Image (cartoon, rainbow, N blue to C red; front, top):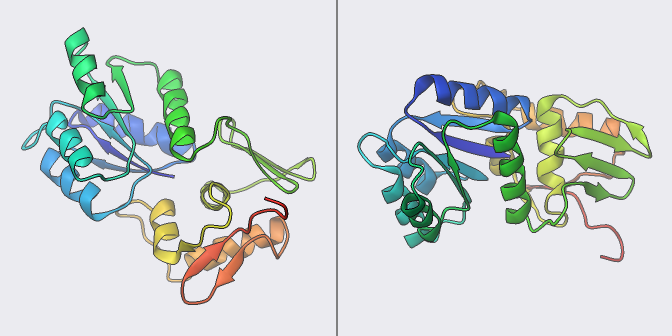
Length: 222
């Protein structure tokens, strides 16, 4: 899951990115509103965490443009503006949630997980597939009732593929979900992660669609 943090407070932005990565997300961070709008238009994110007071383009303008352009990305507004009119205005403009600073990291992570669940069409947090169970809340994964140890990127990759069984993810989309800006990516990095997941579970779990990408098939009967 790839999240864009748009926050011009450097200590807060850095702290959020550290916390998100610890929770298994891939996090990119921008401090400039205009750059953020361009990034949302040109790249794919699973969530945008958006401050309202930004240089060059304010957060409300970004939110309005995202919805006008029908860009299908959830937005969590994170701001010091705590008035009722501000909250109502943000939600009416298309925010999926509105959090006032200062905030508790545990609470905001729970809100992020809830937004991601809704955006993926899931009512509950636990993801199950055949004998695999993945819990986004605890980042625990089991196979046939036994715990499986995954690296952060293996976990992110498995979570992404399991979020939409039957959907073919392109190679570029999966690489974007695993690596943020500025992170060095080896040419065969994705294939290495796929190989490790097949070894830790079973070889048929992830199917290669040559020239396109990868898919986890829907369980029989669904």
